[in-house]
Length: 122
Image (tube, rainbow, N blue to C red; front, side, top):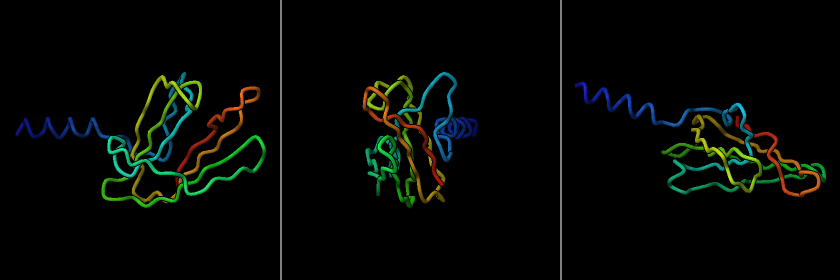
C-alpha cells in the first residue's frame, strides 16, 4: 500500500501544471511558445489557424483548439530571442475547456526579428 501511495505522489509531482498562460519566472523573459496536441514528447505541435499584422511592427497568431484524449500542452521557452537559445523551458497543460490561444509579437527595432510580447488562452 505504501508503494502505491508513493507512486501516486511521484506521478502527481511530475505532471505539468494546468494553466492558461506560461508561468512568470523572476529574471526570465518568455520568448517562445509552442502548442501541442498531447504531451510535447509526442511531437504533435499545432500550427496557428490564422495570423494578423495589425501594424507594420506587430503581429498576432491564433489557435482554435479542441482537447483530444491526451489534452493540450504548451511548451514555454525563456531567453533573449525567439530563435533561442533558451535558458529555461517549462511545460504547462491547458485546461480541457480552452478553445483559443493568442500570441502577440512585435518587431525588435534595429534587428528585425520578432519578440513575443503576450501569450494567453481562453
